[in-house]
Image (cartoon, rainbow, N blue to C red; front, side, top):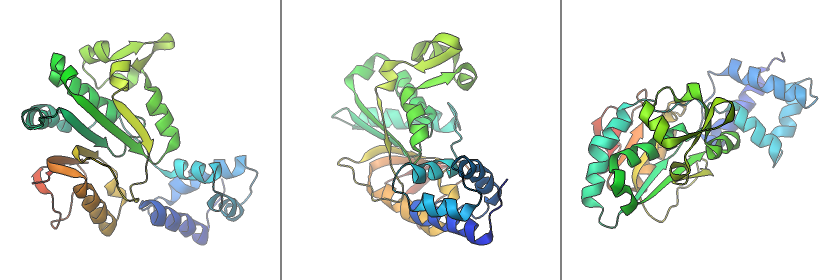
Amino acid sequence: MLKLSDDEFYRVVNFIKTNYGINLEKKRILIESRLTGIAAARGYDNFTDYLDHALNDSGREKIRLINSLTTNHTSFMREPDHFRFLETDILPYIENTVTDHDMRIWCAASSTGQEAYTLAMTIDHYFGSRKELWDTHILATDLDTEVLRTAKAGIYTADMLEGLPPEWVRSYFVRMEKGVYQVADRIRNQVIFKKFNLMDDIKYKKPFDLISCRNVMIYFDAPTRDALAERFYNVTKQGGYLFIGHAESLSRDTKYKYIKPAVYRKM
């Protein structure tokens, strides 16, 4: 395996931190292991030449490097307290206050799609036959183009569905050949997947009833995290909510009101 020099290591770390806000200073082994195979496959026998090529490339090679270094661990119903709170508190509030029946949700780090689809299924389960009265927009974004392709397809192996109630699997998935399952069209069509860098300006015409950005800010330093929370706040509807990961927290200076662990609200 190729070895990163200190200069090469900090070149990668500084590039990712400057452009995408992610702090990889404690991930030297991860960087080295993930880039070794890519550099070798491209015919490079050292990291400096590979990085000269990849970081100055405006196309696929830079995207391949970024995708390889962004961690994408997720599952259906991960941190289920959020989805219970959505069904018991947030959705009743929305149903009773949103008169135009236009609901907007942003899954801001969607990875391979399980979180966004869990949000869509939770909404469908709550509303039941009333769902047809609602215009539900679920925006799901991620930096990694590879995981977005997986998310859009909505195809998962049976073991990936283990966290879901059996009746949800029957209602919201179609069994395909070779034992894999695809999210049913009526759920998949509710989610729009797009590439987005959380360090960019957030410009959307209408504010969100709920923003879910879970287990991402743990990789950011405090100033980056605070700035992102401020941008989220500016596009959250009055009375709307923010979900973060249970291992994360916002600073005391945040404009959001703390509701419970990993749940904040714009009041």
